[in-house]
Image 1 (cartoon, rainbow, N blue to C red):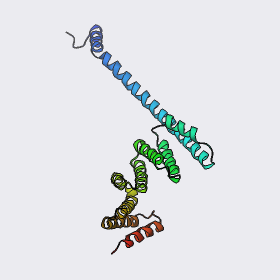
Image 2 (tube, helix red, strand yellow; image 1 turned 120 degrees about the horizontal axis):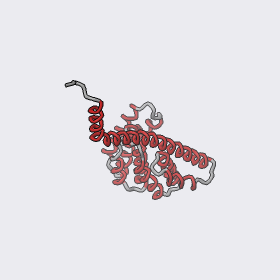
Image 3 (tube, helix red, strand yellow; image 1 turned 180 degrees about the vertical axis):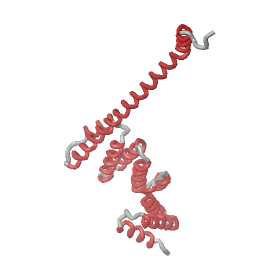
Length: 211
C-alpha cells in the first residue's frame, strides 16, 4: 500500500479542512482588513478635524485681535469641535474677557466647561486654578480652597500655594498662610522660569506675616 495519498484523497482532505476552517479564516481576514482600513480612516479623520479646529481657532484669535465679531467663529468651534483642545483654549480666553468686565458668573461657566472637556491634566488644572481665583474674588473661600486641592500639575505648584496663602490671609489664619507662602517661595526658587518680580512679591508676602 502506498505511503502517499492519492490526488483524490488529498483533494478530499483539503475540502474537509476548508469546510472546517474556511469560514473562520475568511471572517478573520475580513476583520483584519476592516481594522486596518478603519484605523487609517480614523487617523486621517482626526488629523483633518484637528487641523480644521486649529484653523478656526487661529481665525478667532485674529478676529479678536482686530476687534472684529467672533460670535459665529465661537459658535462653530463649540458645535463642530466641542471636545477639542482648541475649544478649551477659546473658553479660557472667553473667561478672561468676562473677568475683565467683572462678569464673574459667565467667566465661571466658561471655566467649568473648559475643565470638563480639557484633554490634558495641565489644561484642566489651569481652568481649575482660574476658577479658584474667581471664587476667591467672590469671597467664596472654602470653595476656592477645595478647587485648589484638586489641582495636581507640577507647573502650578507655586501659584496654587500662593493663592492658598492669600485665601488663608483673608480668613485670618496667618499660620496656614505663612506655611503656604513658604511653600510657594521654595517652589518658585526651584523654578528658573518664574519671573524675579514674582518671587520677590512672594517673599514680601511671607515677610509681612513673620512675627
